[in-house]
Image (cartoon, rainbow, N blue to C red; front, side, top):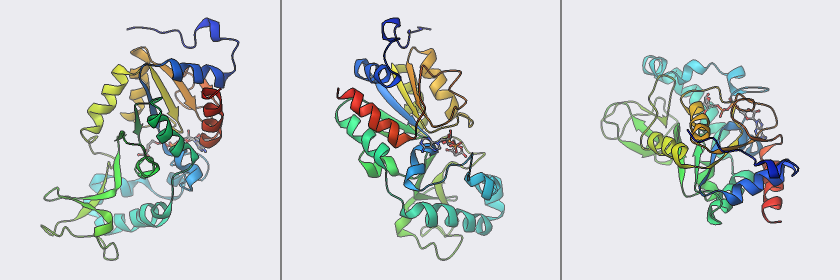
Length: 258
Ligand code: APR
């Protein structure tokens, strides 16, 4: 286990943003790891905390056993949250900045727990969707996948055009396994990266929440962006940028371009 001193003693007198910028510019392989918080400024509520989705909706609608037994009831909630609320949202400055950082080779990839497709929409090319994507539906029977735009969601539950079985969003429900190749790619990044930028995640959901710790134990320096402390802040974070995602990304880019 290689323990890197992050930030190096010499950088102790730099501002937090200057330290973070120096880490990113000096990294061989920097990776972003994002959660619901990066999409809050796009109008998507987080799952936890003030006005979190789980305060309003029962997570059971996203439990695979409940879904199999109550597909219509589950779909009514899923459609309301994910296709009526989420459906119209656009990437925000933080998503676009990560896409620009990839173009400038400052980051190699984004690992996201989000299913809103906003990183791809913002132009990020290497996005590992650890919890899948709402943009696809998958058949519980034949496992065929369909673009959600091609399926009529007025009749619930939607039926597979091929085999007639029930379609579900291609996102991980509670009780389901993490999809491949996202799982392998994400833990692969944690074994290779020397810099991780955590953005907008509480760190409460496994196994996603083991990825930053794996990166840390492999010697990565951990930068965290969040307006509030998370499970990571006292455990793995080396530089905590306590701001909203878009505010932090603007300050970070300013320091990187200095
Ligand atoms: N900018 C950055 N972070 C923010 C902002 C913002 N504007 N607003 C809120 N946050 C932070 C909150 O402080 C919190 O730490 O975003 C985080 C949101 O936490 P969660 O809602 O728990 O989201 P996340 O960590 O991504 O949840 C993980 O849980 O329910 C499952 O599958 C779901 O992928 C999700 C997983």
